[in-house]
Image 1 (cartoon, one colour):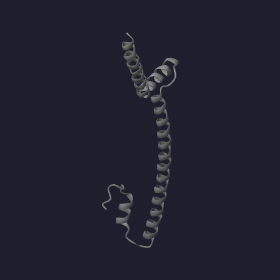
Image 2 (cartoon, rainbow, N blue to C red):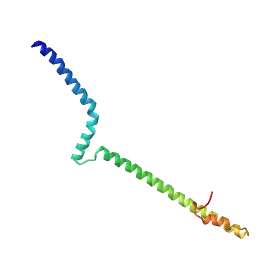
Image 3 (cartoon, helix red, strand yellow):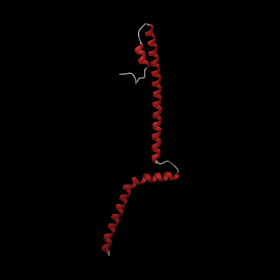
Image 4 (cartoon, rainbow, N blue to C red):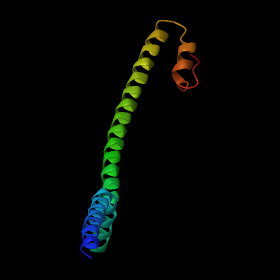
Length: 114
């Protein structure tokens, strides 16, 4: 009987160590879903929802920045068009044929051949 106990104790101890090691190895995979479940039960956001909110906030700021830059470019484009218009009027006043340049000026930027 003592021999059986002498073999059973190390086997049980080894099995216990293997179970504990498996628990710690799988803890990262189990912890996040459990944390999300507890957050959902409490009515709070999950980690995924928090990450999406942060990404959404970042993208909104980027869109606002790009919208501001587009507005600045539109104003600059309008200013350039006014300057070209004044130059063309002055060239016409000097009896210079500016019909081709005026056609390019009035054309859409995509319609002008390179």
